[in-house]
Length: 541
Ligand code: HEM
Image (cartoon, rainbow, N blue to C red; front, side):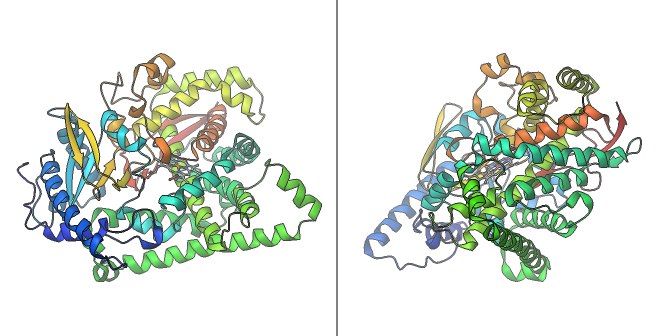
């Protein structure tokens, strides 16, 4: 047993709560219950027998996972008493713990953290993350995502079981190659506006992050909802600010279990603020959907027919509305999918682009290679990049991927196990019991010294084809992998390449606060230090 693991007896509250959660039907969202809640369905005798068996099994398995390396934990509070309150110090702490427990002494790839009375197993190396990401049985998101779900609803990101499977099948077609090609015009138009705005900032240090966010928001609103919100021109600022604040609050909620207690959540003021912001963002999307529906209804029948036979230049929302009847989607179903794409589609890409610019601003040699490549493809022309041009931007893509390796925009992928799962760690098979929450840290899996020559440095050559061929595919998972991978990854790479190609065609970038002065801050998506942002100085080329 690890020295700090809480004894079985004080953990009985957790076990009871765990059992309550494990007797829930696993593939049925409507019946989902939160850990600690009494399940809504009254279990009959067979279920009670099963319950006793699960209780026995879980206790046996708990003894096994308690041997995993991890920081010292106390009964009930777990490791939380050690958590640093300051977000930046907390990220340092997580990094140290990962190195200490996941990488050394035996490169186990697994660690155990007690979040209050709840054990969370951390998987941090390609060998250990692979079985979970490849599993089609263990795709359920844990209660850690509950606040995300309260916000964006039970859409593709948060749903599970049959609902998730049907939605995933339905939505995959909305990311078809032709649809993405249709978005290229929007990517480029917004990128051009973005660099025009940056022109006014030449020579003075400024934080580019808010500008990138507005650009990414305009792109997602136009591609996902067919609506121009003109955030780059200073409109709809409240939505951007609300999303930023919601993600901060959710991050605090996930980190501090005392906030899980409702009276504390509300007394802290965070509960009320969260509800107000969620209401505001949901109302924003509902209104956009209603307006779009009305516009589409006004369209002439011929035009509507033409739109239904070609996916070109069709917003994601239009595609959803065209599938509404066939797939029996309510307006609220559509709202939750649109909210999911609005959030996933701009918060992630803006961080990813920000970090890529920030890295290139620290490494003039790599930036020079990007400039050379852009000059080769575009010469002196000021034209918009075509999909053909983007294919030729091979070095830029390496830089984007290397930036995602060092700073994965989604720093945590979590599952609650619906089935027991065996994972081999350092030659020993560890059985992770059903009901356990497991967290994958791309940050750690992507810093595996067995896969990368210069683990701690930004080195785009890590993505040379011969280097990619040498390593395990699961040591690069910024978009996750397996059946629940990111549906928007091609969208994201196309958007990033378009915007960054515009930026580096026009400017040379210098980063003002390089690493480690600026450090990543995981607020659901990875962000820069709040007070520094991505401060850069740009010069016209
Ligand atoms: C650099 C940009 C992006 C990164 C790093 C990223 C990363 C990820 C990751 C790691 C997941 C898995 C999350 C989990 O299992 O908990 C995910 C899922 C998802 N992403 Fe992305 N994403 C990006 C951009 C996008 C874009 C642009 C869209 C939409 C336009 C999008 C839509 C989604 C959706 C809907 C899911 C849920 C998929 C499912 O569960 O079936 N993402 N993303």
